[in-house]
Amino acid sequence: MSFSPLFLNPHHVMKNLLYKFGFGCVWLFSCLPLGLLYVLSDLLFFLVRYVVRYRLAVVRRNVARSFPEKTPAERNRIINGFYHYFCDYIFETLKLYSMSVSEIRRRMVFTNIPEVEALLRDHDFVFIYLGHYGNWEWVSSLGVWFSEGIYPCQLYKPIRNHFLDQLFLKLRRHFRSHNIDKNLVLREILRLKSEGKKVVCGFISDQSPKPIDIHEWVDFLHQDTPCFTGAERIGKKLNAAFVYLDVERKSRGHYEATFELMSGTPREIPDWQLTADFMQRLETTIRRQPEIWLWSHKRWKHQRS
Image (cartoon, rainbow, N blue to C red; front, side, top):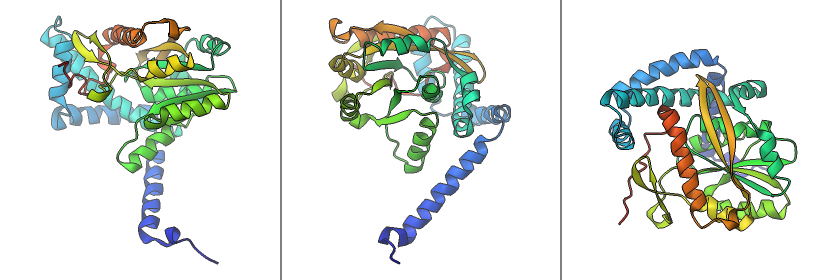
């Protein structure tokens, strides 16, 4: 009997054991009732907000510039609300590991799935625009809402830490959704097209692009803002239908999401108009419940030259 050198490598064996132990610990932790996880979230809030002060300067600056019309007290309520939400997001995401289909369908409700499925009668692809708003990880549960034969997927950016990267990939495919590396998106999309798949693909497009990738600027939350345009460029090549996912947090651990049609004929729309439309819709969503957007991101680190 022979063994591969990889199998006999002590470092590799130890790494596999540690990964399995780590995944096991996360799974056991996720089996705790969500109510208890929220108690832990409240404790974490105090640590993150007042002890660690995680990116507090960034959050304060972003909120102040986005809401100059609000009083300091109102902005402070948004900031505290954000940190409460951010801690909830962490524990809600871990809960995905052991959450049942019935529970996720009760907690993450998509109100108009038939309208999206109807678009797939005339299109091979539907692209979903969404932001880092509410619990975007729970949006990966779309797979349990769509009919058989529809291929739900989302783009992701690989995480440098390999354990966290594998953990998030595992969480995001828990409910039949597929992950596409953003660096391989065009190749994977073309592969799905050649296979004749009916694809619904999520693009979280609200973060700051690298300077080399900036093609469009819009006014967003009172600030000159560079935008990702990849979804629009790829979607026009495929003649994909575009929808925006409007998310609302109904209560703690309960979200409701509604698809809004942006265009079924993207090739007829001037370049970057879909991108600007997405950013405008996202701003409307954020203004409704500002505390549940990812304010800790350095969204405005690039300035127009």
